Length: 319
Image 1 (cartoon, helix red, strand yellow):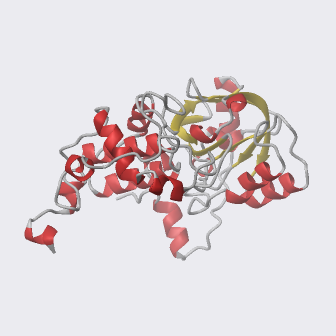
Image 2: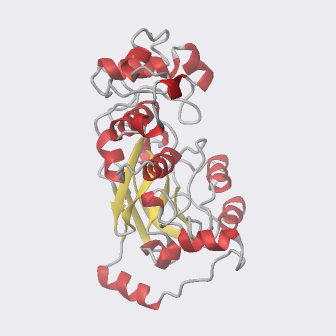
Image 3: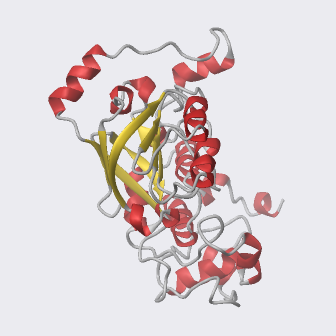
């Protein structure tokens, strides 16, 4: 009611700089890769232009100063006791990383909201000059396997997997990939590719929680990567690359990957590619046949699969 009295409306709060503040915070705490989808979708509704490049640009500037489970050993409760999100924001303000004049739902600016906040445990919330890593929690990868981009939570990746080359193990659903992992068909060095699980292909872009958990459970998170046009849970850790765009159901390169193709992952240099020539990719795509949607015709999910956009644009409805 106070917001109504002050005539502060959603679009007064949802400015481009406010979205950039949200991304900055997410990079600092190493938050979920789902942040990319959700913020882009909200920005679309608010008629704000937000792109994957904004995420990566901020990630290169903002250090990761917390390591929360499962990417680290501190819990969300530890973060709260150490000062919480307000304390993290205060440090970001002190470092000049936050647009402090953005109005918030309190009726005050974000700078005013956190000016009295303090860090009570610098082991949980590290100072900006002593971060866990110099870059933020999320990275945007591109290459011939993700022409429109892919997302990885790099803060949850082991150092030895920041760069990786390995043979593709290809699956057309989450369930078949999970079975193969549990049956010990996946070996060290492999790159598990799960496709047709994107916004159109799912339809609905399910979390690939079971396969990622199975890889960790099998002790393969330091030797096996996973790539998908689906998405992940905030609880995912390891070299798991999601939101590959264009997705398989749109005829993205991920649709024509074959068993044994060599996949290159280079997170520091933001590269995701398959070791195929442009001519070979073009030839395979010309022979590719789009499979029917998994949704029953006439259902809401069927309509959704026809109207939803790529993950690279927030998986929103076309107008």
